[in-house]
Image (cartoon, rainbow, N blue to C red; front, top):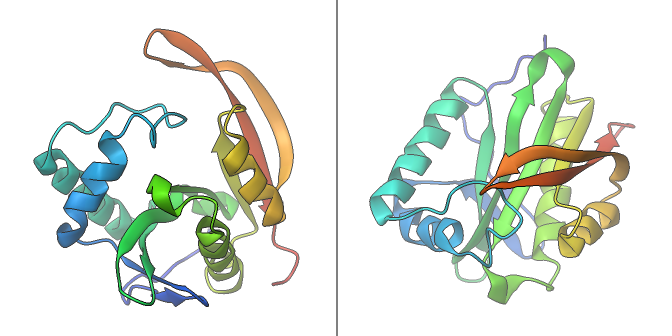
Length: 184
């Protein structure tokens, strides 16, 4: 099984971004991200209802990182350290050298290449440092923006699951994209 060491949190730097550990001070931005119907449109989880719930979410991420179930970064602008979103590896399957990547950003920062830049950084980290063999992303088939980001980053469509997720009284489809480690 793959062994990962998160005793020192991996801060990642790109041309315009710093990806750092999410902390309790990020709760207001996490609340904005997770309470917005626009941002959460394609993420089938209940909307966050309070700042306290956002804080609990951050604490749950910390616990899951301690248990090596995920790694989560705040996406911040290098120029002013403003948090614009989050990104991470969720549902890590270390026994299979595979993890799921996921991300969300504030709408005013969409379409500027930030998510592509952040995703490329964590993919490189996942393959070169964590030694993952593959990274997947589960996407709503109507989320064209996210699909374009994944394709720009070299992810390929792996499958389309029909009505595999039940949320808010509806059955939803999921498209699976993945990328294999071919030596970063």
